[in-house]
Image 1 (cartoon, rainbow, N blue to C red):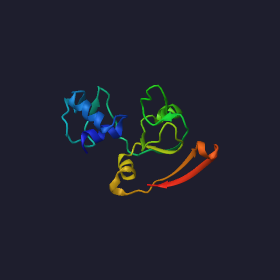
Image 2 (image 1 turned 135 degrees about the vertical axis):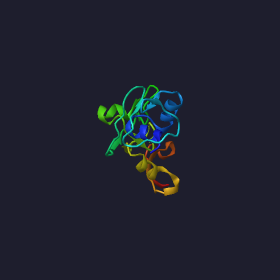
Image 3 (image 1 turned 30 degrees about the vertical axis):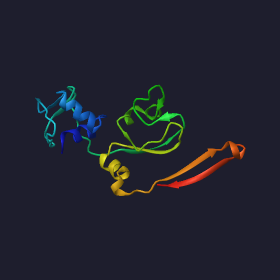
Image 4 (image 1 turned 90 degrees about the horizontal axis):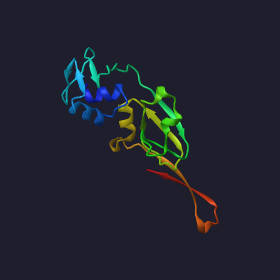
Length: 150
């Protein structure tokens, strides 16, 4: 397995953040400064920022009914985040897709990168259905719903 994928699967870092940590010299592989593109096996010791990582042997995926007013990111830039709704033991999970701050609905969070990729990458052509409710001033504040399939 590539080093950046291992770090992403065993920590809260994304693959890009893992690549940056590796290129910044903050990751050791078997007590040596790691190089980008290194391969990792089950007997290797990987330490980003001097913290030994333990590979996850199983994955966690949860469903969250995201309420309006929360953003789907770690840094909320002043807004509450979906991580504020979760117990600390789930803070390593990453959202599969996004819902806008003003949207509510099902949000999947996982530490399974393959699952996230299969559900979001266009090559897998997953159908998504959205229900949009709007208050149109010309309809005298009557809510209208529309189902959109993408």
